[in-house]
Length: 255
Image 1 (spheres, rainbow, N blue to C red):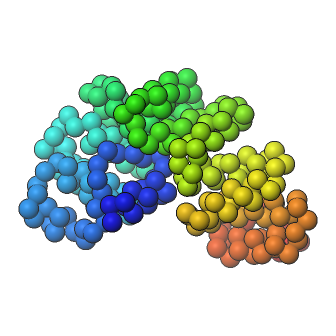
Image 2: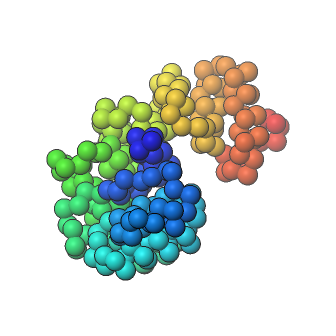
């Protein structure tokens, strides 16, 4: 069960890596904390509720964790990510900086804060932290920071170096969905259509379609001359993600 939970976190929250063991068995805070009222348990619950999109409940549990351990860097790390989801970027940055001040060598904080800075356009500072997260021997999930570094380089319009990061991530974890998704897009953009198909197949073995995967799959099949399959992807995109930006790009005449 714990192994399956870890895979879910990798898939659904690629930006977030907290060094805690999550439980997918808990149905309520009262049940979980009946015999354990530690900060660790409240932290686990806070992250779990974030995963479920229950942000207010997540915040309540993180506040309980922080009350017990005010200087726990992983609680601050989780709070920072929660504030990101709430679009409160000033509070997010403040919590990341506090966590890093307390634990400057914590690779999960380095990874999250580095990705946050890259998202804000602070590429040099972000890449410095991501590079530290990648290089530390204590990081047993380097593919997370490698993928974030790749996305940072894409934001800097440096596709070749981004591609190298994504490929390195996939060497370490061949089934890491976010890196596979990025390689599908890059392969299509470079005219490597069979490679794009291959990355999509690998992606679908570990994660469901998104509007983006369907869009690039549709375009890839058109480029390969597979009109019928391209039409299938188009119909699925319009059916499953009718309000997506990709669906809006489909011209009415093609519908």
